[in-house]
Amino acid sequence: MLARKENETTLVIAGKWNKYTLSAPWVCEHIFNSNDVEFEFSHDYDLPHRFTKDNIRFVPTDNKVTFVSLNNDFEKKETIERMAKKLLTELHHTPILAYGYNAVFEEDTPCPEALSLFVFGDADYFSDSDLSLQTSAINRSFIFDNYTLNIAYSLNEEGVLTLKFNMHKAVSSSSEAIEGIEGGFTTFEEFLSRFCATNVFFQTI
Image 1 (tube, rainbow, N blue to C red):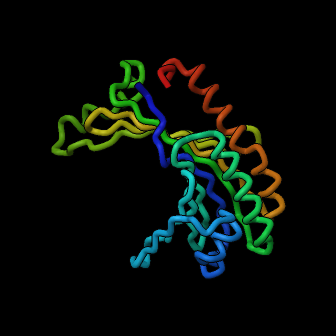
Image 2: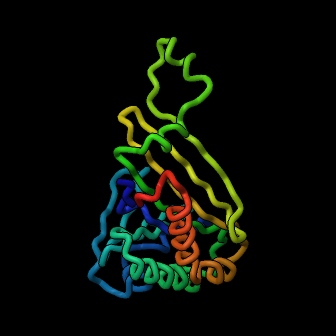
């Protein structure tokens, strides 16, 4: 059965963030409104710090901040929207480039119709070569409700089907992002519901 992956539902705000402003005390006070926040400090320069409370994770880096709904609870997504709008209001001088939503689904036993999507015309070439196919992928990009919508299908060598959805919009200011984020998760979730209901391959979601 195609199932939604936890820890993969995110709201990402791309911009030129000052990670020194987004310190642990500041994030606890201004984003979570609490001192009871789990803080994971990374000693690896390439890995960001992480803040987690009540199944919501906040991950700041220089070029984006990411809010993660750890349990796919829609109430948490509404909370994330409020937190994101507060962040953008507090740091309204931060140059903002875009915001977007992500979700991931996996199917361990895809139906034959779904598997047929990955029958490519060059399959015979690869079967006759010494290459070992690891993953097959299909990427599609659409315009949806003034958003860019990317859908990526992939099938690995173990036969696991993965669907990744990304819906994003370019903006030029914090105020524009705040306006767009209001109800953005609802738009994203409504699209996912319609996609699942009308796509014959994935009605098992």
